[in-house]
Amino acid sequence: MSIQVQQLSSDVCVAPQLGPEAMAAAAEAGFKSVINNRPDFEGGPDQPTNAAIEAAAKAAGLAYAFLPVAPGYQSPEEIARFAELIATLPHPVLAFCRTGTRSGKLFRAATGG
Image (cartoon, rainbow, N blue to C red; front, side, top):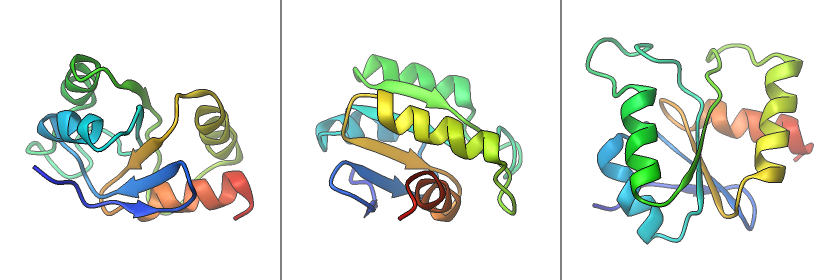
């Protein structure tokens, strides 16, 4: 399985929704950490849950963080937490949400980029 990523910096990429099955592919692609920015069940009952994705990420040897944020607004606290995560998690980092857009917005707000 290949995953669709957009590179935002030398060590941070974003992607659209990833499921548990994508965690091994993320590790194989060289990522060391994953940040899930999508709230559980935002897309309905068929959306993979944080718990399932986290279990698969850890099984693949990835560090994992859950920072669910709303699509239309990211608070200063959420932006600060994202900045903290990308500063402290092992690199490279892959963040995802429904389309990758909100993870990209968080990155730009957190880094001024």
